[in-house]
Image (tube, rainbow, N blue to C red; front, top):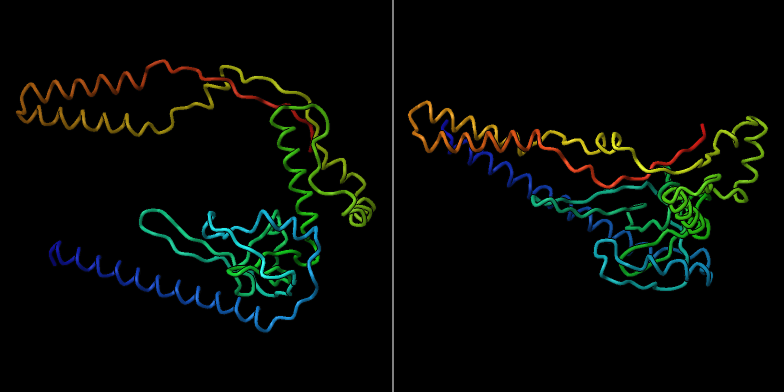
Length: 278
């Protein structure tokens, strides 16, 4: 079997795999669209969304597959949706990919940190747009108000960490919302709250040694390539390639040595936080 036959066989395998993947993706997408149509046709609204929920949904009225495509709510109705969470998609040979999040077969968008409250089998309340549903509540644990509050707390926590503001770190979990769980936990383990406490003691600049450790050159791919080309040049020179090959190989070797041993700029120091906690 010659190389052309092997190449042709590989191309056929790749072509068949590509076509099969495209068909499977199209079938899944057809099923997702059908599930959304069925929910709109047969679903019975649980309730109407509140004015606060409508306001909190506005940032998520953007199609997940096209961030520039605006969407709109079809109505104020909130529908029940049950099922497993499945993520699927398709990727191209150029590295691009399209991914879809589905719940019960319906395309969904998870606002804020709703994804953290997923289970094997999920019970959600969703608002509907023309192309997808937006999760408003999930498994009796997530709601829009709580998700937005935790997001704001995370932002405050990130800002506190970045500037190194001394004191206890902002707690992401709302202590009021988790009051009952906290009481039970404290009875079982009085030290739990203290164990979760993180305190920032201060912030300083990196030392030169820390900067050097952070800026290690890594595997030096291009230096390795220069050495490989230099050795090729030396091999050709040894085989009678002449002084031109010898000069080129020597120049590449000198360049590789300089890149290997040159003194690197230390770079600007980063910030280092001192913190205390378990």
